[in-house]
Length: 215
Image 1: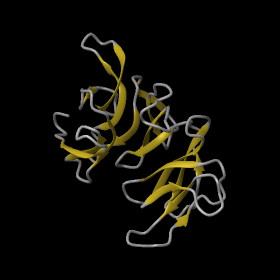
Image 2: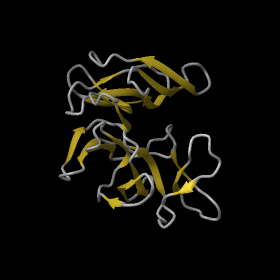
Image 3: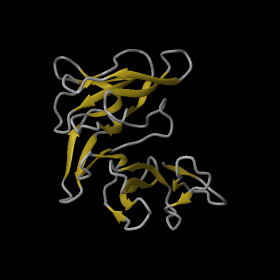
Image 4: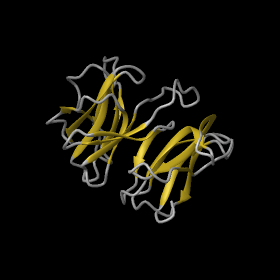
């Protein structure tokens, strides 16, 4: 598994790799000093995408091999990148947060073509922590806003799960209630969504069945 952490005497965050069942981690970005966050493996486990820079300030997305070699700066100021199943695209948010309860500003979703460099906005409404479904048909995220029936986008201030197709169509909310729902993730087969929520009282992890045909 790959994660972001401080280690030793360093004050900045780096990307670490740890074998499942292992006890000794390897820092993959030891030579970088700008804070590295949001590492994500490609579906084949060969590459890692991550952000280097401040969580809320300037920074850039990077891609590197799973060993930390072959690092490449993408010159895209994005957050929480996630891979398409074929490894050819990254979805990312234009904004981030340090506390999910105090979002500084709305963010949008973009998809970056890693071969051509084409960068396309797919959802202008607020959206953070995007995660691409294993079958490639959907992208889930969490949001503080919604699109009304008349097409207007409004900020609700609530935390709900949203979903959209990679071409930017069929956006809708999966949760639309007062509970605090955030940080979604897919099961490996895409049949379930896991997310954090306080709908049971204290913040915990919940799961819901997902049908890819209907969304």
